[in-house]
Amino acid sequence: PPALWIDAVEWSSDGRFAVTAESLHKQTREEPCLSAALRAWSSCSGACLATFSEGPLPTHVLRAHPHDPSVFAAAGYDGELRLWDAPGGRLLSSHAVPEPAAADVNAAAREVFDG
Image 1 (cartoon, one colour):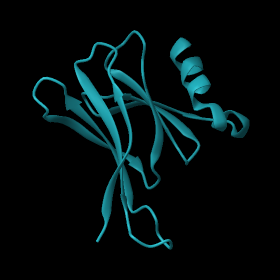
Image 2 (cartoon, rainbow, N blue to C red; image 1 turned 45 degrees about the vertical axis):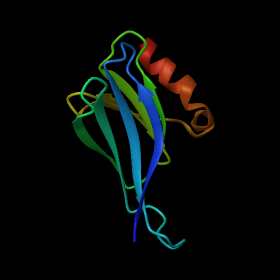
Image 3 (tube, rainbow, N blue to C red; image 1 turned 180 degrees about the horizontal axis):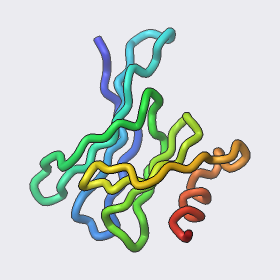
Image 4 (tube, rainbow, N blue to C red; image 1 turned 30 degrees about the vertical axis):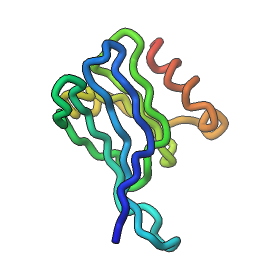
């Protein structure tokens, strides 16, 4: 049977909600990841506020915007850095991360956040 993995967790800058990166994996090496998604959770009620797809590959980095508590950056093994309106589950923008910068997605997220 498939197993659900929690790949990353990040709190919003105001603590009102958390975002989890989840991936569903088979128990075989042939197809290790079946699907991946992000979920925004209310820190007060524990309710899921939104679920949004990150594509077929897991997200390995989540970062909250330092000044806008609703915005998160997510990066995965597909080489894309995506900015999300987490409570609304809406993709704001997507940026290709150049190969050398892929090792430091934190720096790429700071660059996108800073404009």
